[in-house]
Length: 630
Image (cartoon, rainbow, N blue to C red; front, side, top):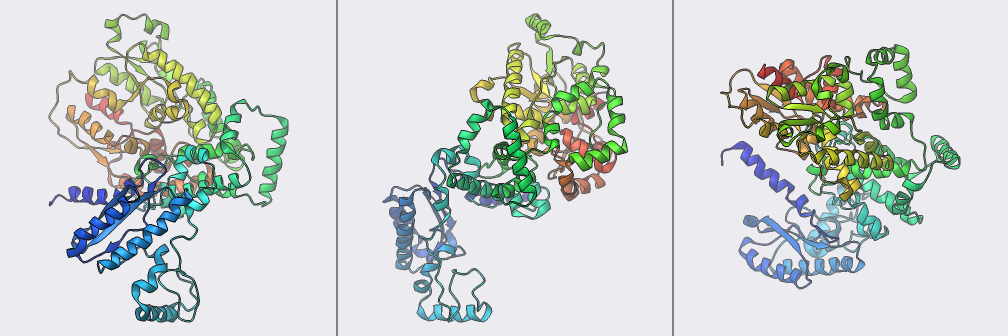
């Protein structure tokens, strides 16, 4: 194979294989305790037969792969390490694998993985060689500081070797009640594969890890911290599931306010609480959701991050900015009635200084002026009520597309929605802008989950009613549209209903069925992908390119990581430097080498970040299509 991209795909599959194996269903997970054995290749077939018979005799499932030409095997039997009996079984199987490998004249460590199997070192190396290794260790590490307990101790130092039956993570995990372990799957099932320790600036996972180089700001780090937090709660007799169940009925009271104020005061004075360490790691998460698809185990950090924040703030006060972010869908429509007035107010140096110092928000976005409502005055797309839509005949409904508003595009980037209305008309459809109904994503991100559940249910009821009309519903922002599919489903389950809101690139192919394709020519356009969209819908860039090609235009997908804005993350003072740093990693370089007027981005956050850093923004691809059609 001479195709570089094909070769890279094959290697990527190999790289992700171990992680994918760890995504097996059930409590038993493939554990790397018997892997990396190596026997002479001519004995490999017989060795595999006996190895499999050994595992089969215990009724275990397992993954087996390796390097046949070198006789190396990587075997991962599936065990539930929270089960004490299976932990004992691990030691028994380890002893049997050591004996089996010796029978075939093999090596216990073909490549790596000594670690907890160091107890076998003396027998594996033999008395003489083991003694020489101890001399080498003594020469370079006489105080036994480097990986103590692995391979061998220094000569003259009586230190124990690590053992297979030593205390392991399962010993701590089993202290967490089963119901809690099951419910907090995202944190509990991280198998430590470390694919999130990724410094490829063109990869979407994990932006906070890339910019900080700190492993607590990775999915693995956050999962580990939450797992320990759950264990500490169990140790203190606190049931997080019970606390979550009580929250919707629990009303805010003066007593709870006093308690949270007192706790926050003590925290500010330096009183230790492990929860603060977890909170620090969670605050650095951009909630981009790349981990929910890019991690082999599909660890969804934003999901358990929201749950943690909800419980954390039953004990500690929330900062004012959390309340402002969570209520944006309440006040944005009101401010949009007089956008110039509010923009003038927001732009005042004193207001911006107060916002930065006392609220912790910086570079607040300005409202669209003129507003969307003003831009669509007199237009039939904005004058139809739900009742009028329901009264349309089947023939009339066949040509209507319903525009689902989101708070950020409708009130802060209204031109995109107005241009979508014009685009739909250009291709022969009758667009109707639906009344604004809050999405709630900002509430979810900040951990206002009880409030989010109410918002999601109300909007689901509305959109389910609209769905009965049988007309396509389309939204222009990926993060908000995908929230209907993901967070709504997680929170509401079957109560969500079966409505479906499409993104523009999902709707256009069917809407353009009658359009003749043109020959592709001219200068290309460049699409910068939105993190949540390109990871949840990896085919989106190709679909956009196909749509552009239909009109004779070339669209190239630009390989970049996260833009660093991620909703309100980039507007928070404490994240400001990291936000700009993340943008610098890949977006800035690409923006400098490409013609700005040909660059496009589907995400509102992405366009906001470009405008903030570069001074002038980029357009949504639908706006470029509108220009191409003319």
